[in-house]
Picture (cartoon, rainbow, N blue to C red):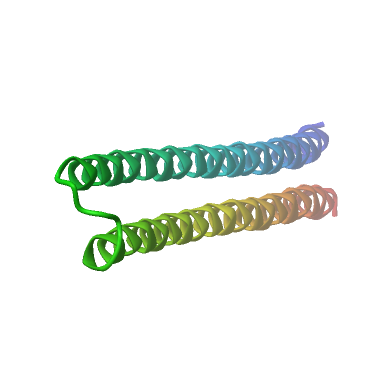
Length: 150
């Protein structure tokens, strides 16, 4: 009778180990997915911040160029020669700065996309490890029960 109880205990222990590891596998995958979605949401937020930064920089540049144009016109100087060249430089510098902001945004978004993909891959690997452990638990419980019975 005690051998049968020990066998039953081994089988139950193996089954409980199986269920626990299966639950851990599911949780690992769900946690990874949640963290990956957070990284993707951060990428969207970073992109919006860069759009705002670019817009603000363009507005400031436009105000500065407008102020310079008004000052030039008020002084009676025509927009030609060095005054026109200064305006062109301001315009091209603004475009260059805008491109740098857009490039930084692209890098940040690519980084977050990579982070999300890596998080998902890590979660899948952990999930697989837990599933493997769950099957090992079943096998160990069955093996132990068989050894007790013989």
